[in-house]
Length: 528
Image (cartoon, rainbow, N blue to C red; front, side):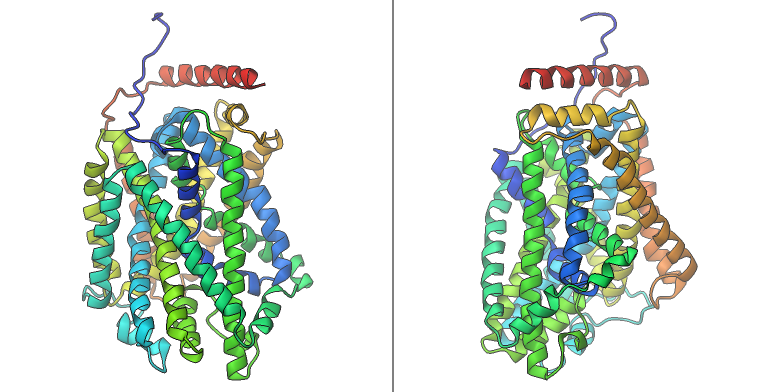
């Protein structure tokens, strides 16, 4: 070895995907989550109906897929978790990587609670336990919701017990490693999810009034396209739905083998996710059309078309109205649970992968190291009488500030230093069938950050000036801004802790960058 060569020990990848199919199923499973079912239909309907598909498609092509390519390129090129991969760009990038890890950590603590709700409602569907008033049942009988400005440590057994069991279940999967755990689970859960959801959608299509519901969903309101908020909502939907910019896809891609068709896989995953969203819209609005027809009102008169209210209030009401409703309810809530679990596993892998890389832990030890504290936090905050309120505030702030800030920092980091985007594009083209054009560098380096910065700035200004919802400001500061502060503090602490393997000096980083660029260019030439 020459005197100018710097030796830097790479974190050892203890496991990899068994093949591209396993990775693709996991990526699709991560993208298809609760938001596909309870967020997209309502967002599309309230933002122009069929006309919304135009900005939605634009957002997929110019935000979703480009950011997905960035995640894939970073993970596959640098072969590590977000902290390691972004550290390879610039030493300060490690903080951004840990920021992504802690964002995922916070999300998974409350995401598991919604899955627990779904498990219970799958059981409730059999006897339609919610009775004649699903709203009262959901908020008062089931969740026992405390006042919005009241924090309660009082556990709700109906939530806390299934929540604890879910944590045990997913940590057992995670402890088996990537291929035997996460990949194997997705190979079972994702096909099952698609099958159950298809059966539910087909049943919904044959309900009386389904056509009216679909007409309400797909009828274009062309005038809405002149509203910039409609376009912003389309960008937001695609961004959150594809799980880009906060470590998930970067982590997944880091376990891929060297020869992998990255861009083609991203296109398949992206459009599979979008197809499922449209399918969800068809199923949801077919059912809403039946509900409107039964009540003798228009679809536009129905309230609760998105979020938890759609899933846990409106749909139980629909189930009670229709013949064979119990089976329909079981199918719907079982689909919700499966969609949640596949996404939860991806969040868990981000945190586990980061700990494995930093401290050299095995999958089992990593799962226990963060899984036990995360499970305790999850049950303590979201398995209580204030769980719904806590979840609402934390989810809003961590998504609209934490996730968006994470993506902004990552894109700017990749665009501003070295420069890295050219090298990343060359890496994508060297291993992929679908070539990435130079315009991608402009999109990811300028356009996407500009859109996200606007979203971030708007959210911060709004929350500082007006608070959030009807919650007391103290409550918002503790759970909203507190969640963001926890992410920042945790990221600082993890950045300061030493790596088990050799630390990287600025000189080493500079050499790695040069070597990466040379290798990427050489590989691209050989591929041609």
